[in-house]
Length: 202
Image 1 (cartoon, rainbow, N blue to C red):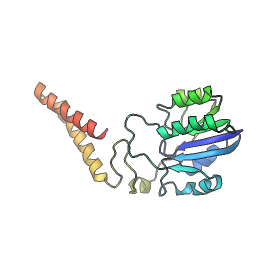
Image 2: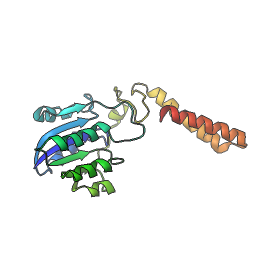
Image 3: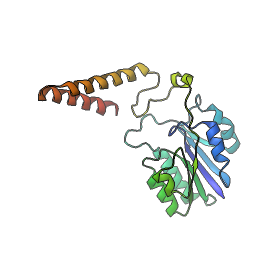
Image 4: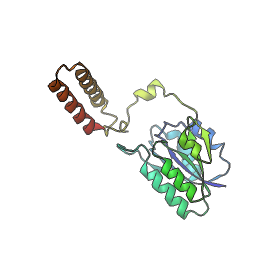
């Protein structure tokens, strides 16, 4: 069976070791593969796999506000299912939130769908099969490492960590003020300030 492998590396910080173990459980050949959210600094251990299979890569999206699934992955999945006649199945790793429509569309097109997941879920159980991915705790060095990534869902570049800390601090202050507000006016002001902050960054 020929598989299209579509993996969002950012969806669960997938490590290469976990990825290789998952691929060993695939009952078929890789006919097409693409990695989303690829960062050359953080994901350079995937390079041999990329060269071996001619894998395409897509750089991280700067900001995913309303949906956590990479829309490029959805478009590619449907395009491949409709145009690559030799692809019979898909191995997909993505944020399971908002991905059920993609899974259902692929199944309606007659494709086998296997999902990589870190825990059984409703979406994974809608697939033909799922493969458990190992959970990998990031090292302290990796957490502290600066790169050009954007912090999740904020649009703030990774190098601007101080700005993100300020956002968190402002948010906490607003929540504290809201909780301690004694009058309707004070409560209204704190709610408006919180609303402005959320609209700006989230």
